[in-house]
Length: 428
Image (cartoon, rainbow, N blue to C red; front, side):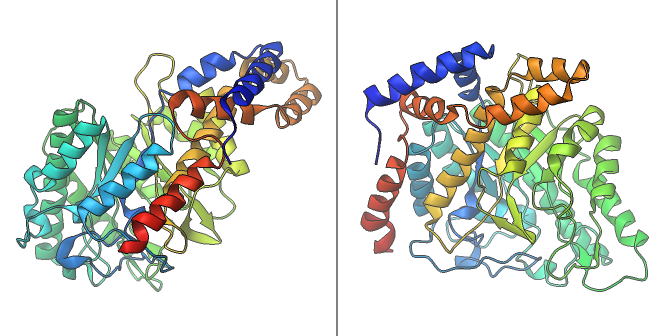
């Protein structure tokens, strides 16, 4: 299925000339694309089970459908699967862990007692492969989260347990940053909410804010660890009320100077993040972007090259939010989906490559020309150019990027994943 190198290179030369005529340096676009890391989500490889007590049953509004063969059953299998995915993805990237993926050597360690040593295997693996690590406290799939509340819980003892868990996870994140030389983004999401209409919307939010303040009370070096908070519109079991709503966390992130995590699947179906980024980012220290694909609801489908993903990527480039012009990045990219109905390794590859293709399209956009047309009121020219860009040979530029980065070109990656399924996944 792969193209031969001469054919890829010939197509690349033609594409470079086409873009040059529009004032776009395709070579520069590829150089910048190679500097954008994507944080692959560990939970795609094992259906969000984690490794506590052999894998926990999900709750907290999470559900994974499908029973495709080859789910990772232990950390070594998960790491091996991630390595196969990374071989099929151009560039150098990151890996995003949940606290429930700790390696405790068979000992029972509750979540409020987690320490960096419980992730030593992950740190060693990431260091050996040149990966950064990101982190998430796991506020679900636990007896103390069974009633749907954690940091906003009315019981001080339960709330205190989850506060200690959040504190412990921030220290783990800082240890990741110290060991790997790149700051870990530690993201807090809680499922807290009600299935039906509450009589008191304010009290849980007051408790949540107070608990978050306690979680974040310890000052940690931002060169090692960055804090993010993640809102949600609704969830299974919290259809009528979510304590950590968008408005709550937007205010909290601005007032406490935290990163705001924006998930593409956590919006109302009529809302899009591409329109929100320029509105929120000027007031925030940064954004953690969870790249996902909602279908009718927050169903965390595998990312595809959709119109909205393209628009979001354009905003990231137009705003220089990825730090490609020398400043530190203000937006951090991570995947958030889990699909057990297809090959899990392939899901990682499809999702990451789709995001990278969207970023490449944005980097190949003659943004200065488009914005000049807009400033001059030439909306006809703006629309005409936007439409013309859709049929330009971006695919040839992408293929050359894969070739140069040592990643499979075209669908050759699928042949590799299918061989891996035959030799490895099918034996589990």
